Figure (cartoon, rainbow over the protein chains, first blue to last red):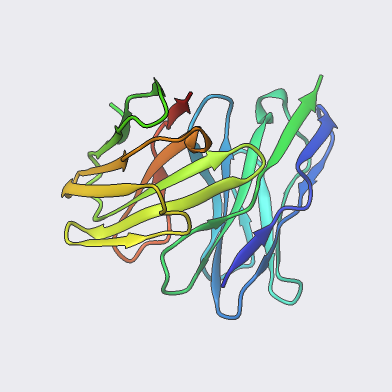
Amino acid sequence: AQSVTQLDSQVPVFEEAPVELRCNYSSSVSVYLFWYVQYPNQGLQLLLKYLSGSTLVESINGFEAEFNKSQTSFHLRKPSVHISDTAEYFCAVSEAGSYQLTFGKGTKLSVIP
Amino acid sequence: DADVTQTPRNRITKTGKRIMLECSQTKGHDRMYWYRQDPGLGLRLIYYSFDVKDINKGEISDGYSVSRQAQAKFSLSLESAIPNQTALYFCATSEADSYEQYFGPGTRLTVT
């Protein structure tokens, strides 16, 4: 069965500093990987996804994540964060053919002015 | 208009009461899902439906039931609510053969 571990429950970072949110997964088959973002009092929005092709995927607001099969990781990075990036970020995995998402427990990113 | 809507957005109910949470979508997606979110636990899958006649249990289905009334509607029921069902509930949809899910705004349920 698939599982997802987000190693940090909370990450405080100063505005304009870089950030990395870590995600590791466990699965015995091929997987597809996702990062969702939840802004305060809102639902989840897809931030970026890895389905196939280039292992480095990017979002429109400057985040990127790299699929590392050997380390079973899909860490999320941003070189310079903004106040508006304050949110909770969820890593999710789906095994090929299952169409079910398994979520990590989430990482709360707090950007400090 | 939102593509995935949930009603009610907030609900307070008492232990033992029956409650229904409703989800509607205008995306034309075949697949619909119900999750619950608890602080520090992330989202966990309760039930999912790949079409009107295909309903499946998820990770934490005990104490819940669902009804897929139409392609666009998927309801979650708590037959006899208990306090540990207090949580934020999300509905999601996806196209057939797609791994990408689209989420509604959530229903905050409190059971006293």
